[in-house]
Image 1 (spheres, rainbow, N blue to C red):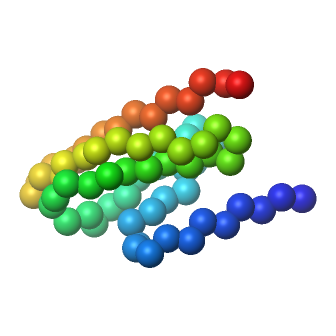
Image 2 (image 1 turned 90 degrees about the horizontal axis):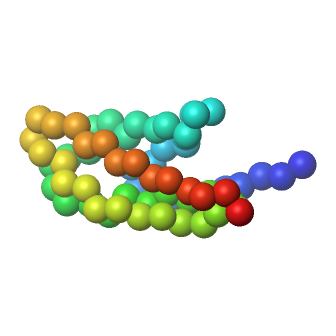
Length: 65
């Protein structure tokens, strides 16, 4: 049995679905650093700007080992 625990200092986080997709709602407008983490493949990050009435889509790709 394995377990992974992530502790963050904010409420803007998500757990991916079985296809790897995720959504974080209710983010105020502004510039953000988005980080994703995989237990074997590590951390990836990207910058995103959230507009007043907009949606941001980011694509993160991991290569298999």
